[in-house]
Image (cartoon, rainbow, N blue to C red; front, side):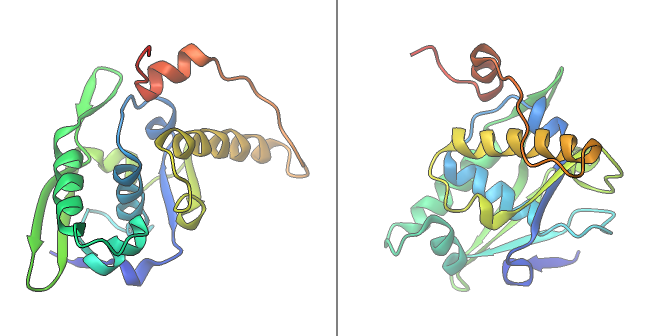
Length: 186
């Protein structure tokens, strides 16, 4: 199986089917969402299958903006989250990652994206969104990152029909956001 490392893909695009933005119901931590975005950014346009994706611990530290000695605990927490918090699209449930292996001596973790996500991440011909991963890395909230994706999706859709547009207005209902982002009623 081919292996992809993050340094080969810095400043790459996150490209995913718009159902992962508009229809998916999930709640991940800020770190979980960013790691998923990093994994997606490693997928090449012409890939026909997922590969093993390597996330180096130094890159992970940069991703979480930390020089903490507890980074190994964060890696463990993050991989557990990606493997144990399923999300829904319609009546189907998915996990982001189905395999994680930590290489302590070499300071990296190997992750494999769940094969059921192929229709949402590979060979996308239409109905997808894309953005540069550097646009979300400084964001400090899971909800802000998800809102960014919703806004970017709507903006891309609008720009497709109105190439000279400078702005666009649309409506999002709070109840819909609560359901989509699995926000508790507190």
